[in-house]
Image (cartoon, rainbow, N blue to C red; front, side, top):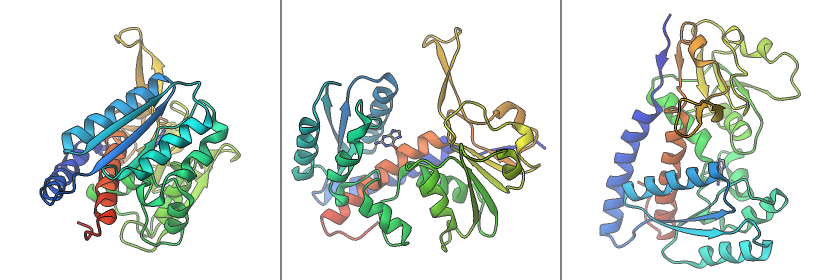
Length: 297
Ligand code: GUN
């Protein structure tokens, strides 16, 4: 069997066209969606993620405003910038790029973002609403994965999904969303993590594996069953002297070895990554609509 390539880039392009049309409609009504992006410090990976997000905003017609602070910025300085974005009338969504240089203040910083402008879906109000199955701004990576699966015709309803990873950004919300009783969920979900002995014992039983472990190629071909659907969330840098950058991106799965065994698989890059940014655009437009008392599109 040769795995079907789940082309996140293509699905993202389709969704971004739909979003762009909606942005044009909204802008014509006098509401141009705006995203405020706060970047603290100069971590190269964070810099490149933020640049990609701003480029995607520009292509969709969304205003983006970057606030850049040095790594030495104090908590008070960071919170003041978040509060200013909360107040800004032309900014509907706020994104604080993580990790912050001082991770001990992340919780307070995220909690300061107005839930109504929380495009990342990280605020406890949105996390709680999501858990309860109420309307909420959903975290972009798990939300994007639901759309990759749906638009590729891979329904998870009644299937056994194994999520590897329990981060607040991906694993936990992913497991929750997949188990919800709606047309994107209704799966039986197992969560594996660093405390799970023999993760392969679980992933081998899975119809769908979501790999969000954050370690390069830890999910190997012998750990999946024949025909399984594999979604690779990993973005790891591997040294590669043939590249100008000196590195290449690899996922959490051994992609090449899985191609002959999986039923379908997302590539890295070009799988989950473009969908994460797409759902950020989606949430920014949704926030702009809601803040202006306009119906959801
Ligand atoms: N760092 C890694 N992923 C994310 C994300 O989805 N949102 C933010 N704000 N920071 C991140």
